[in-house]
Length: 122
Image (cartoon, one colour):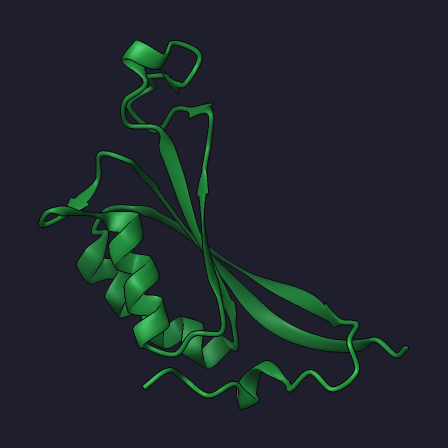
């Protein structure tokens, strides 16, 4: 088995369960927009606790009070596709903390197409 290394960008958008776009969560809206725009992959991570600039701790330790838990939308793709998606992030999650970093992908399975060759959904 050979390992193929690909350089990509990872975009992370930090929000909470309470952040909305209309009647949908901002995380769901970002996930759907990423899929529609043909980005290679996206994941929504739900944290068990955390706090933001307000300093208010949001936790799942007390189920009756578990509101506004932190969410992270993580997207990995080519630099130009991530860069182009930033305007969508600005529209759907204004004010959200957003980070971008270069990552190295290890492709272990022979026969997998490079991410650039993955066709967007119609």
